[in-house]
Image (cartoon, rainbow, N blue to C red; front, top):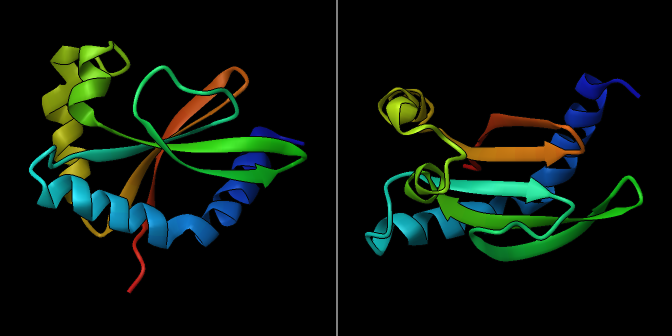
Length: 116
């Protein structure tokens, strides 16, 4: 299966978890933890963030974890000199949730539209 189709199908599978991610993002913002919540989605337990959900896709268990732009920058996932640029892109997508999906050797940021 090509990467684009795989990620498209994974994104469709994630739609069932949008409400949980949206509620978590709102809590992160409302509790002044960060204005930039990000959800990590991968098959290995991530070394950062807080696990909020496990789901099955393509015969594997996937983990959704909540983290923040600040944590990703501190851990070197997002380069410090790119944080301001990332914030601009994030704000332009305030109608969506930010996800960092990692599958095997491929990782990408996507924005999934919020519900309602």
